[in-house]
View 1 (cartoon, one colour):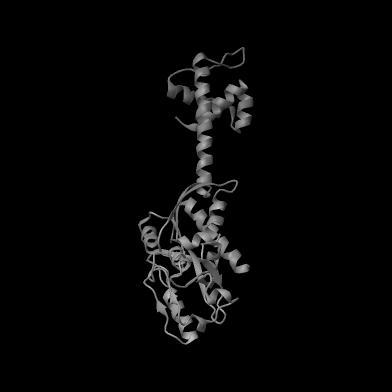
View 2 (cartoon, rainbow, N blue to C red; view 1 turned 45 degrees about the vertical axis):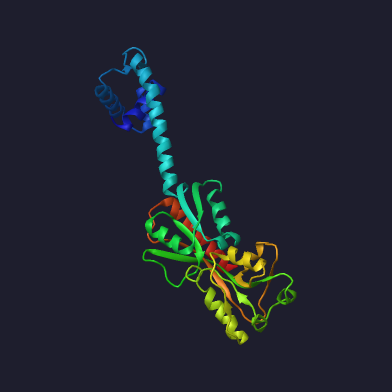
Length: 301
């Protein structure tokens, strides 16, 4: 049974006049009659009584069939609308992962908000994952988009877009001489112990600490690495060292922690959005498009 037969039958049932129905359907009356006969032949029942002296009328079977035909056409219309919206990336699901430090930049929440904007019904799942786990999950298809700190290389099939470049600042324990300064020179950190996340997860932390030491004329004392920046700040608040952190982490107000800019060393860190090349899902492509829009806005700003 063809959908066009159903559509033609519904129009004939509405008009109860073959010529007017044919005009609405942009068909010749003979072609319309042929479609109705084909439908009736397929079903094995007469749907329209074509009286010679009166207007066509629906038979009992025709009236019952009309309700089902209308429901079928309405469902087809809904299915087409859903398909088109899904193709435009307005419907679907995306799995998103982020490192803890990315959550404070505002970039992740901004992109999530755009997924719930009017006209979009993309659902998202979010989880916090360390960088190596994110990259593994991206390659395996368990995560669609990851927010992480820049790395020099990415696994095959994964690419990244720089979303934000921010200054690196110093987190110091409150009440220390460094906390009393408006900006901390590198040389003032000679006796400090530096706390940082795992060096293979937060690429560049060790290099940045070594840069501060080189500019200050000392070999830095580096503590055993911790899980992430939040753990590093917790140790700083407890008086167990200092940490170089992205400027957005100033939003983390932990007791005992003060943030100060570096006076004579300029360090930056980049937040990137990583995704698979050649992504097939329209919903995920929509999120990737928002990554590119965010990156373009940051470049203009």
